[in-house]
Image (cartoon, rainbow, N blue to C red; front, side, top):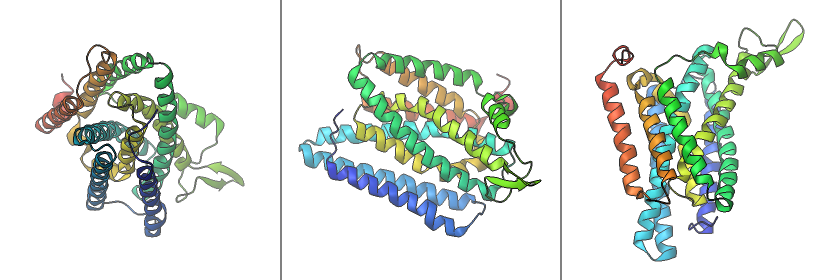
Length: 320
């Protein structure tokens, strides 16, 4: 697949990602293990959103400069914005699962930041690989679009069915397998993944958390990658919109952690978004829904879901 983005913009993107990871792993590491407050999380969330929008503006200018066509630049920038919003929205589901994992293992707030930092690295690597594979498949086999579309529709239906129900990690097959393979300590040992107990080196609960977060990355990458291909097949837009959505994941986690109960209907909205995107892919050869309409539909679904969440309590919604 070919991209409309010039080579220098790829370089700028890589520099931004490396700088972001440097800030996460070097600068913030100096703070040590500490609980991230709502104010800090909000500030970082706004910073990542602002960087993403600035990058989209640079992308618009680069396309306009390369093609000399404002209309093309507008379309491509809109594709980035739509893809970014979809991936950011689907990342919310990641966050709810992370919350469940952290709650189940009673991970101290001070240690959650490191887990998320490692999870973000894993997500970037996994999604990059899957984007390359998905792009190659689409270039070779057009009918894969229909498979992706059907998969998203089924995933959306499954998400709707599971929304509002309590997940039970005790019955999670991955967790059962991990416990059989690795002896696990009952207690944390700071931010260490292994500890000594009765003269033997065994895993800490934090390692189990990292493994489950990694598994979650794989599962959600499988869901989200087809979704972005419904918007565009340009590898630059697919990759950058995904990665920018992921880079803000850690800050968004701590922000949503404080208000998660207020958006109890959000999974229903995400389910509808997935069904819409899947349907869009399945009818693409019959009618190609304009990007602006896709963006409007996604924004409207999420806005209505959040509004209804604010108007009802979790107890009320569970009765329906």
